[in-house]
Length: 583
Image (tube, rainbow, N blue to C red; front, side):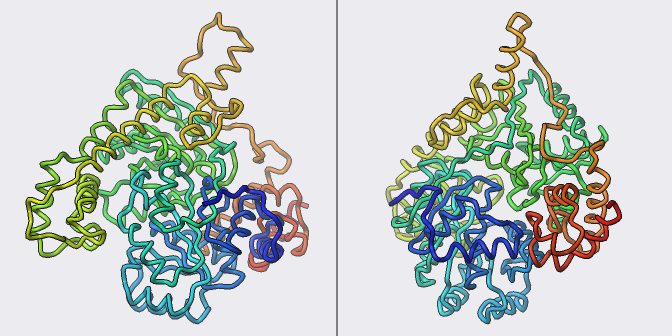
């Protein structure tokens, strides 16, 4: 097991990858972390940890452009659909196979992948339970297998997915192709578990810092639920017109707070797993195309959101793990622009996560009862080996783990030793996991209550060394204020920023504003015409550079970072026309 540094020696493939990055996506250089992964993949499998917004996907997109036959496993249907939409806008022959397609659509997509008409295929881990599908892919001979959101395979991760447990066997059935496993967040224990469960013991490990300089972390402390709501409304209204996500711990609270914000003049909607699929799709789509500014949601929302310009994430309720908090907060500022991550904390914030931890870890008698239920059921759920409900899923997952550790239930849910209902059951795995979860909750509380740099608490959790204070979190800002003004006036309380941190953005009053605004209006109209989110056309940072450099012909457009040949050919004449009107 090796750990590679982000700086890697030049290989023969890198010039080709740089050319593709420039021609297709309009970026002249690869990031050091991207070069490290692409270089390592020339000779070995890779497991990499890199923060959200770092461009991890290029580690499999560029190989697909170079040689095709790349399969990506992703647990989030909405996310893979958004990613395919964005890649197609850049001229990449990408497609997906998941439960949203009809049988004939799946068959045609598979045929296109075999023929080479599709070079990059996304699929869900559930789809790989189909042995004929896997056998067909194996006969094709994949050039690369990419396992996205790899933390889902670990019981120590925060979003364990039982269907990921099959991926080791699936990989072998595919002929053990070159593999890259990717995740944005994984603590040291989870990283070890991921490598072991995916059979990547010989892979190069490329672990990047989780630090993201554009995120500002703050905690507001409230003394009542009423005060929490007032803080939320004040925070969101101060950022009127900006995209944001508010995370809550229950469906009822999502509905209540969405109504509260709407009554306060905010374009807000709620999102949770209890809503019908059409409502959820419509809410997500409205958020993606800026018809809704704020979504108030349980953690069911965001897993499939690839929206780059989320300017703030508020946690109204505290998650049970810093890992979950950091991934949810990390949905802000994917475009690299400044974004805010706010947690509203009370002295009872620990209570709800602690309760859910106890519910998710059944005692011995409950596991025994579950075992007897399994023996009585002739038909088992194909994903977990039992029927699941939202309220009991995690507890049943842990019960199944205990039974698997006792060799009473196989990894695929098949019952064993069914003639011995009194067989000993090993529940030590449940106790061990519950204690781990309680320790993780303590780390989360430490983040919320510390007076030190919050970024350093995050780095410590993920096994990194502390750095100089970040200078941007609320504690660092408070310390700087105290140094400047002295402590005789006491600590400032209840203050909020105006939501417009210093950035590279163009603002009203800047000389570039009229052109920037005209380009945004053109983008909005074109996005509506094409039926895609505005950022699929161009990110704001591309419009900013266009407004500042004002290219006057289509060849000059290629000097703009983020404008590749495909988008130049598709949108170039329109862009030049809009810019010339301001020349």
